[in-house]
Length: 431
Ligand code: SF4
Image (cartoon, rainbow, N blue to C red; front, top):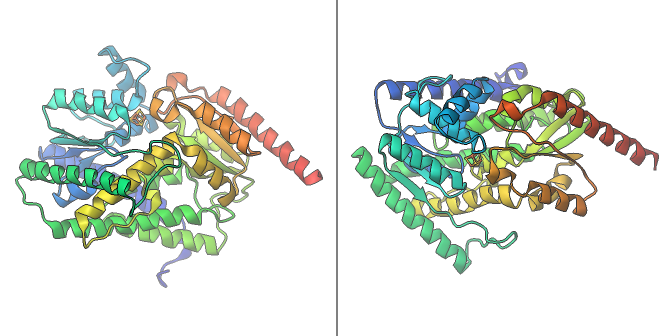
């Protein structure tokens, strides 16, 4: 720790600095919009920020823009507008909020969103592909889709040194080389491999930091809430990937968490239950949703969201800057594949997490408008309960649409869940 740093300033610094970086990011996007400069639209599962930053292209994450409309309690206005234009109530709410942002000329509660010059996406979610087609139609921009080979069956992943892995890696590398050519055409700039090396170095600091803070949350009491604090860290991990600010932020965050671990400073003063969260947060009542758990002394120590919404950064993959493009392909293959596994095969990871993090209960949050994350969660839950003697709760709502979020109903279910956890614990003590 910096000897001049006052502990009172250190604890909570990650949240304060994260919020400020996030505001600055939107301010910069507003400037880009005002000056009508180029910007790239990307997604959290495989943003390829590493390449885009090498061309100084500002990145826009429409998923983050959309969830911000829900956190700021105006999502219904955006959703209604898109539904008036024919979008179904059943489809991904992020798409609809973004569509309305586009037809409003980029008007957004966080500031002005620039129009895209290019969209870069992966196959991590099939909605990405149809979503980008909307921008293609509205803005007549190139759409660059990178196909990342996913896990064919849980437990069959291959790794460096295996010929199947090498074939997949080369397949991704060829696509990255095409993306570089496309960015050269778009920006009129020549690709600078040393700049990419620098960006990869910053991205490495972030990956190391992200993995470390998740590990540190095994501490008792846990140091940060994966659902609330974790979402702030996620914002920085996505928006500032491959930048000096992002690198510094994660070094500082590790310092804060190590300090908290050393001094036993938890996110709750009285932590009673350690919970894992599966799915996407309930953004329409973001703070309140969390309070329904913390009021019982429950806190989220980890989540599948911290894995897939960071694009697999949780794996802590470090690029080899001596062979940047080859290594970027390997890192993208491993990380984006892991993000997909976090959605489709999360039962294996949860099984390990229960032991590693001392989890008392698993909260499943399937949502109406994200089929990608929610499909199969009921089966996955049943499977986990067959394997493990663990309490689980299945709470259905949405990440955007307040029409299907009933706080009163949720509270009843959550209260009953904690009463069950409580009596289970008393029973175990009595045996
Ligand atoms: S993962 Fe879910 S929320 Fe994200 S774009 Fe796909 S369908 Fe929408």
